[in-house]
Length: 250
Ligand SMILES: NC(=O)c1ccc[n+]([C@@H]2O[C@H](COP(=O)([O-])OP(=O)(O)OC[C@H]3O[C@@H](n4cnc5c(N)ncnc54)[C@H](O)[C@@H]3O)[C@@H](O)[C@H]2O)c1
Image (cartoon, rainbow, N blue to C red):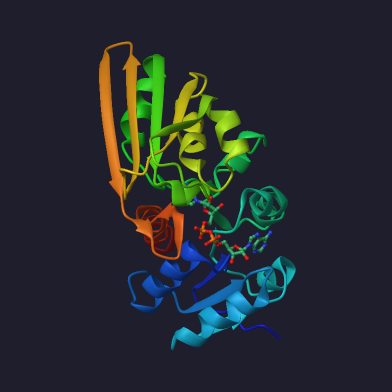
């Protein structure tokens, strides 16, 4: 029997860069959680993360097993494919779900108020969502990352993609969830995207310009890449930790 009474559990799907930072934040008691349930399709990753923690942790072998522990919140920190595969089953259980791989949601018609997309590697989404109500004319996102993030070694800046956010998130599922998060926030307005592999940048730089009915916005984020995953910015994990804190206090 899985004990569920009065204990606040958090499930983490994906024990890589983001999952690890979230688990560490839980261990540091930054959020009101009593037990972590970890799942990674590579079970060694979940076991390795567990071995670093002195917090109560259970490693499970499937999402079904995780759901039997009745977590209050589940964080998807795995991949767009994982998010697509699991979102319906998790929301059917009425569990709050934080989706890091936001690109997955572009192709799904998810209406549940239990699905939460954190601001991830960017911010200012409140202002964008407000402007979207009045009407947005144009959004242009320029993302610059070091060639390492794209497994490239170009010596000069190189535009690796130009087009629409939906396509950018599909072609770069591990690098361009930012484009998806923007697209989800401003819809039905469209987001134009330019992705640059730039040896001069050491930080992941996301810059976006917005022209809307009553003004303009210019936002820029320069994030340290995660040491173990240069595609991912630490800010993305902290945005999930902040959201987790709020959802656990509900
Ligand atoms: N929203 C944002 O702004 C933002 C920013 C950075 C990263 N992300 C996304 O968040 C996700 C996690 O990022 P990360 O840097 O921690 O990645 P990572 O590669 O470091 O870790 C992902 C982990 O998930 C596991 N995994 C993959 N598919 C799985 C599945 N179907 N079921 C169970 N486990 C699975 C992998 O084995 C790995 O351990 C990625 O999709 C990434 O693109 C989003």
